[in-house]
Image 1 (tube, rainbow, N blue to C red):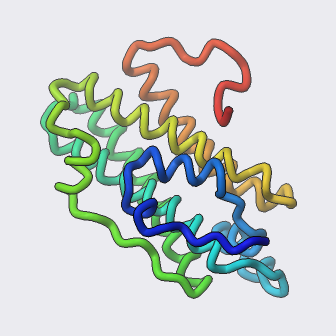
Image 2 (image 1 turned 180 degrees about the horizontal axis):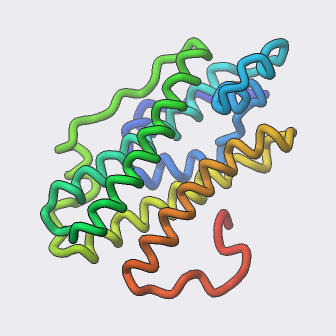
Length: 199
């Protein structure tokens, strides 16, 4: 494997650049995926380019930090009805679980997890000041979830093991579920064609 170190600008850069990196350079080693799945014994004896894995996992961690804070911004906006707020908080909880798994894996690989930025930094990057109603909040969340879905799906082809690919697929499945629920809540049609995600 080649050694790919993600520039710091992409770790803290715009969400689109992080998602793009996941799609074009996000080939995790079997070791990293095994650790991410909590299968430490499976990872023993495998070789990996740890610096590349840490870089890729930090990009994913950056996306999870962004999602957690986007849902926090939505929850704190006062724009969400009670039922929608409850779903947003539930989805935020999923992203926190993803974050925790990513942090643990990065640390097991001897890396340093990318730090979460301040809520105000996410608000500025996500243009939270333009959110005027519940539909605006849901639209933002749906766009982020779709980007995360496609980013996670982008790493699956590089995994040589069905068991390891399953971990990345489970992350993508969570994001897809979030996107689908949000799209439905917006009253938008679901994707009409088959194979709509990950392209």
